Length: 476
Image 1 (cartoon, rainbow, N blue to C red):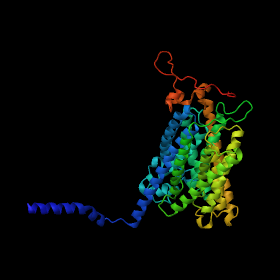
Image 2 (image 1 turned 90 degrees about the horizontal axis):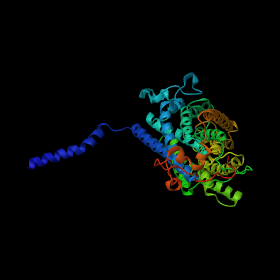
Image 3 (image 1 turned 45 degrees about the vertical axis):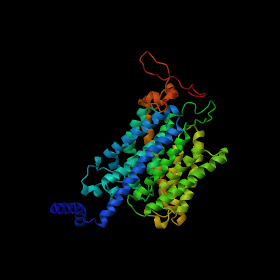
Image 4 (image 1 turned 90 degrees about the vertical axis):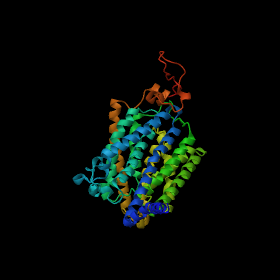
């Protein structure tokens, strides 16, 4: 028995020691540990950016009326699904691969990520600077594409056909967004000029906003948004706490967006997180101050949009500017967002979420601010900004990138939406808009008690929608 006990003890010790023995025989190198840390960080950042879809969902639900909240979440889900599949199939290759003779315009290799491991850096030259695996690169970048697509629909809430979301998503993620991404991030012609857009003020946010503007102009305002004299009428969202929750989720997600764009676990992450935080805080105050000056009360929704506009603005220069500059950038973004939103409302452009103001003007200002505030020590790409002795060179490159990228996205999106309008139509019928998109487009009820009529039609046992509100004065 003693011998048996001794054997069991020795066996147990050997079992416990095996992992240590194996580790000693295959000791990881510093390079292995660095790669592991970088990969973990990129995946965490990708998850944070993907979770921004929840932020968009809550923001849009909060600013929508109760009868349309089901359509919002349906749209979020289907667009995320389409973005993932289309970017895997063609979008990632168009954006980051070597395009040979066409490289200044578009990538032409690596579709479906079907590239041998040894050839990854030679094929996807636009991301050869980061050492993480191809799958990690894709997961991070597809989250960005999904965010840009989500921005498109913020202006088109409560009146757009669901089929429009699906068709446009395929074109936007499959071609429009990748082209702009390649020009700036994939080694294209704007990259060769040294354009500074660290995390996507132009690539992601301005692209989404310009597509949104194109769609909104063709779609027209919601019923009841303007009276007979053309004066704008406020159509309040139904749940401000949900809207603010959406803003806070987006704010947290931005720590994947901006610091994650290092695509490496370096100390620079902390510096970028700092500029991101300071800008967002200043944006809240800038928008709220403007709200008080203009209307003599502090608008909570405007404060949330101020944070988003500032986050959009700091996205391009977050790695290139000093903390003090990020405060200036964020504050101005909040002010510009408010002024733009008021102006857009007056000229008849119905933007329920303020996406054109926050993502469009925020993206323009943020991209230009890199040409103003980039410091010589942090100018890893391009030249120092105007305020640091760099002259107008970088500012000119930034302006060219805005005009070229924004103009391209607007015109191509306008074309696609015009084709959709002429074929399947962009907008639901007036009676469907009045009843709400939930009951007509999806049969899903965000708040069923408020929307389901009590009568039955034709004896089929199905509850049918009854008009929950009459057409407002001035509606078409």
